[in-house]
Image (cartoon, rainbow, N blue to C red):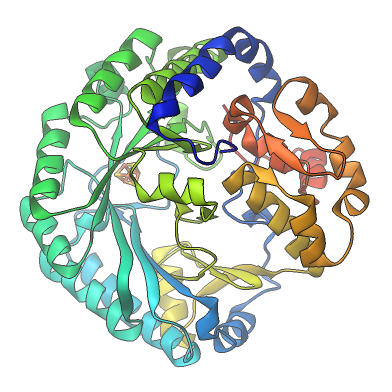
Length: 478
Ligand code: SF4
């Protein structure tokens, strides 16, 4: 991320950087593979409490102004079968009545939020995630889209995106989505090897994935993303190399390469993975480095953390222009917009607060029926939270933190205010992950981009207590 201005003509140098650092990376990465937040928010979700409730959220919604910008998210929780690696909030069902009930409720929720957020801007981003949003029929897709955009109209050029499961998504659905204005589609792929797919209970032939990409391109989708996961049962370097061959032959515009999160306290079905089936830590690391080298060599830009994009993709341009931002939907080009989340477990991010909905479908339905909002917990940021959020966001999105920018924004010298945090980066600097300047400015190195959350962790005031209590809150960094 520090290489702003990088384009495909520079890919050789990036590739070399990883190749040259391979031995060094293998030596140091085990030191940093422990659990850590992904910093889609700061403070992170485990800090939020029920002390922030629906009345607080209602007040913050009423205070939204057009200048705050707007992004919309809907969580569609339904899936047809359980993928055994999955830690998302989802409901496995074939009950056709449930989606209709869900739509009745989400329409009420949207109307209640609209009544409060009367001065909200036009939306510049809309995203559906899940679960499986294409569990909804074309008619239900149209109904949900209209409910959201009648209440919160989209502005011209808005980014409209959806996550889909290729196993259940039809051409008719793809065409309905495109007609409505969806132009970005994200496909869960994970791995194409039959043995891995059987182990994770997600059999998805590459031909199914390729056919859906063809349908999406024919319908006019501008951007296709693949989600891949490394660290799954039975994966090895040679098997994942075959997955990469297949993926690169299809040629998505973006690739998210996630580390498998073994979080059995959240996803009990993961206990079914015999620990001996999972690749050990060195193998997992070698798979990651192999994937990075292959993707860079194929011309993808390393956008940050686990995201890659073609050089002409908006995310790559935003990285170059330093307009890249991060929210609950991942990296985005929509700078600093307030986010309104609808549906069970959905998160809203307002200028100085976070709010999360009830997670269970029934609890969310009851809450919406009774009071319109379904806020379960949240957090209002303190002045110190705002300072640290700014620093963490710059590190995560730009790979650098300018002390001059921070100091002029918050009215005191960064190096003095955060002397302890800067000193705590000694080991990361000597390991070649970050470079500090005399005024406290930071630059994350290419190798450090792999472990950028470890750099950000130095500025997280809540983390030491979370680590001290030993609570299992976060997945591993690698
Ligand atoms: S990975 Fe996706 S399709 Fe599979 S259970 Fe999880 S949310 Fe559903």
